[in-house]
Structure formats: C-alpha cells, structure tokens
View (cartoon, rainbow, N blue to C red):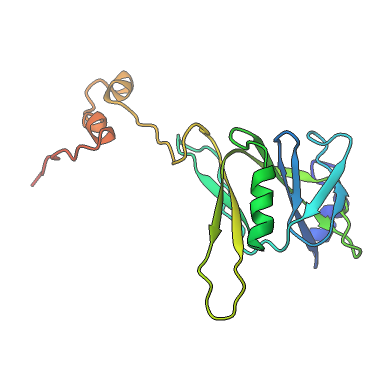
Length: 200
C-alpha cells in the first residue's frame, strides 16, 4: 500500500463518487466538503484525532490548482453560492481571521453510503488570503442570494497577484561572459519597453 490506498485506486479506475475536502487552519479550524450532509473524516497529518467535515453543497467549478513554478505563483477562489443574505451576514460576522491560515485540499472516494473509503488524501496546500462576498441583482421574482468566496494563494503568499522572478544580466554573464541576451531584463522588470536591435 502506497500514498494512495489500493482500494481507492481500484475505485478510481471504475465508476466512482469523489469527495473533495477543504481544511482551513483558522482558530477554530474550518472543515468543509463539497457535497450534502456532514462526514466524519480527517487528514492524517492535519486532523490526527479526526473531525467532522460539514457539507457545503455541490462544487460547481473546480479551480485550477497550481504550485510555485519558475518564480510564478497563483491564487484560486473557492466559492459557495445560493446562500440567504441574512444567514450569510451572520456567517461573515462569525468568521475568524483567515489571512495567512494554511489551507489543505484533499480527496478520497466515497462508498455506496457516501462515506470516505480512506483518510482524506492531501493533494494541495495554500495560504488563505481573504474572503469575499457578492450579492447579484435580483431579477423578476427570484430570491436574493449571496455568494461567499475564499481566495487562496500558492507559492509566495505575501502577494495577491502572481509574482515573477527575473534572470538578470549579471547572472547570465556568470555562465557566459560575452552573452548580452539578458542585458535589457532589468528595464523590462521596471515596465520599460526597451528598443530591441533589428538585424537585417
């Protein structure tokens, strides 16, 4: 048996129900899974004593999860929609501070009774940045609903936008003293559009 249990691998190879779980390490922690009802479960390295993950409804769109690659980090947003505004306001007032809290995303397969077939397998870790709220204009006889979101960063969590590193001319010349390929990089990093040579 490896990192993913054999029974979960076998289930993934066929028709399966997938449980997606979100752990936000606030004080107290927030445990949420994208489905109906509450599920007793845990991530071994995070919830060693086990806990209950509360059903947050159906996850309508799975964000693209990225990690720090070549100096570029990204952020994703997890959202819950269809919340009554009065209930949403109470929920926002009761939320603990989220900025800087570790966020773990894990998954496992569910059996025919919608229970986890293993401990939650962590697949991604990020840092909570901020929560958002949005109420769309009401059209016709529709009810007013609220959408709550949590923005999570990966990589350099000190920024709300992607951070990019640059390869400087000095670094390039350390490998190739006569190479001028990176001579204009510092100007590009400042937002200057340099005039590049035109060879005919």
